[in-house]
Every structure is written in structure tokens, then in C-alpha cells.
Image (cartoon, rainbow, N blue to C red; front, side):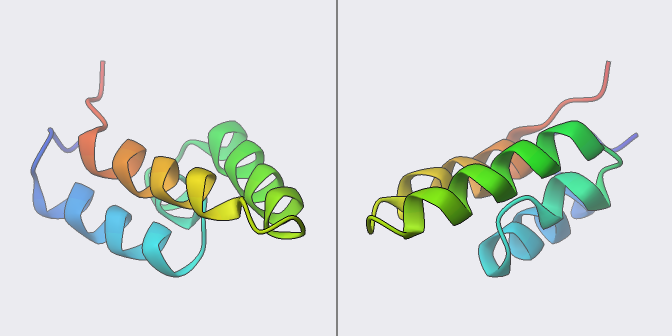
Length: 66
């Protein structure tokens, strides 16, 4: 698995920039991808989805495999 700052994490963060949760899906973290996509979708309705969107990007970029 890629480590923090690796090319894989950079690609995942870029994916999450476009679609919240996509970076987590690229990293193989299906549950986190679903959670972030649903939360961002629901919160964009009240214009607060950017919070989850940023969390998604940072989570993908800072992910460390165990």
C-alpha cells in the first residue's frame, strides 16, 4: 500500500477533489468512500458539502496503510 505523500495518495487526493470519496475508492476503502460521498451529497443540499469535500481530499492525501 502507498505511504503518506506517495504518488498513489496524490492521485487519490486529486480524485477526491473532483468527487468526494473517489480517492478512498481508488485506495480500496469502500466503506469510507460511501460515507464521504453520501455525507457530501446530503450536505451540498444546504451548501455545507464543502466541509466533507475538504475532509475527503485530506483523508485521501494523508492515508497511511497499516
